[in-house]
Length: 253
Image 1 (cartoon, rainbow, N blue to C red):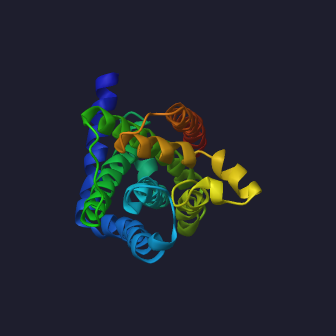
Image 2: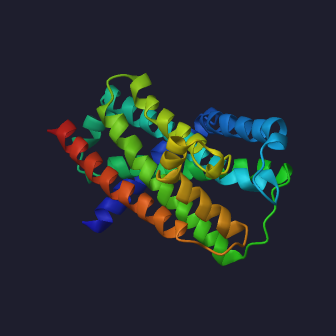
Image 3: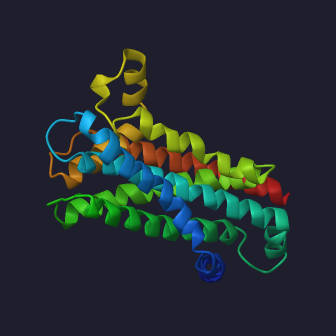
């Protein structure tokens, strides 16, 4: 049974990846906005924002990476919605394949697409002056947090793709996720915010994720933010996965 699931998922993932290879504008589109934000904040607002010591691009990068992942996942919802609307999902289900492999193929494709987008944004950040002396273990921890965050958002995208009535509705789920980093510690210190805004910023998932990533690659002592970041990512992932599977079963019923 497990081998059946693995081979089916691999075959369907290959199909989705071929679609991306034939349409590289998907990757280009998902990286343009984060890169534009990166350039704007570094060269336009960076001189007016005081975040303490260190380069502003180093301070800024974690939030930009989260925006990149959220932007990339809009296309996950879009691709799943198009498969559902065209009847391909139902056609796959009429074949002798593992049912959940259809969703997992989209999830794995999202991971690959997000990885490519993140690498492109990091390369641009390096050109703008981003530097880190962190060791392999710290970077592995950063990669782990980003992976969990991507998986959590991808399963949210699956819910959107299965539940949406229109193409715009499928993609629109990512807008609040792209906005969240702007009300967090991603761009400015939360201490500079008004009371109610600061309270929200310090108690939403993006702030501990951003702080944990920044501490890791800046070789700073890791605070409790890393545990809060992991708790948020795992909590969202578990809930989103459960709701996605419920939505999928209802579509097949």
